[in-house]
Amino acid sequence: MKFSDQKKMMVQNQIEGRGISSEAVIQAFLKVDRHLFVPEAIRYLAYQDSPLGIGEGQTISQPYIVALMLDLLDPHPWERVLEIGTGSGYQTALLAELFERVYTVERIDVLLTRARSRLQDLGYNNIFFKTGDGTRGWEGGEPACQLFDKIIVSAAAPDIPASLISQLADPGLLVIPAGSRFMQDLIVLKKEKNKLTTTNQGGCAFVPLIGSEGWQSD
Ligand code: SAM
Image 1 (cartoon, rainbow, N blue to C red):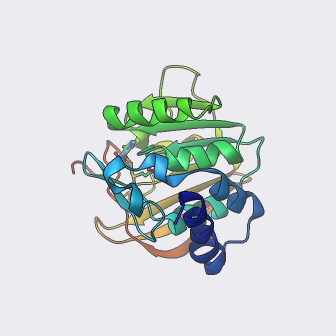
Image 2 (image 1 turned 135 degrees about the vertical axis):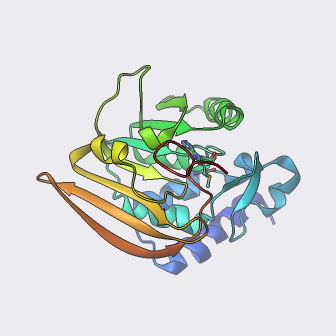
Image 3 (image 1 turned 30 degrees about the horizontal axis):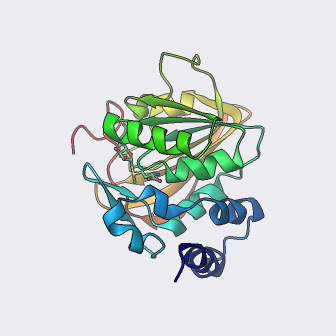
């Protein structure tokens, strides 16, 4: 089956079929080709219902969990969004379809470099990239550190990093898997009128968020 047909089936069965109804999120998934973000040798698996290896011991997440996180993020184009864990750049591309400006941080430079050139080749010019410890948010460099309306973390933290909470605008929303090393809960933290509230959206399993406000090592 052609990749374009596999992509439509992925959206119908794995995303809409599991209750994601945000039209903007669905359109973004229909637009971005997942097979361009996985290693060539496993492209034939690109639209299956699972995470896949992308090298350096990291993964591109299961499509459904990405869709769920983006849906929970309640995206509006004019908002400023920060992504922690660029990985393959697939979710970054989806964010770039949903927001006018995307800031993304990846700890592993080779992944960041690969994702940046892939995304630039695809014509995305609304993404700011940085290699570094994303547990500390968007630190130093250009453009200068600002507050973000939305923050999405695609690796699992033991706790919600304080730096991310402080870089979240008011009102603002942060989506993050948090919990133990191998099993976590998907947490939505809302900042409103200087008050923080969290909701638990259920279990998930992500690779660890490694850094000064995350896990200390792989
Ligand atoms: N969303 C990505 C995609 O679409 O391919 C998948 C992300 S993968 C599940 C998690 C990523 O978080 C890995 O690439 C990992 O290197 C990165 N990561 C882990 N700790 C990090 C940190 N402190 N700062 C930035 N990135 C980090």
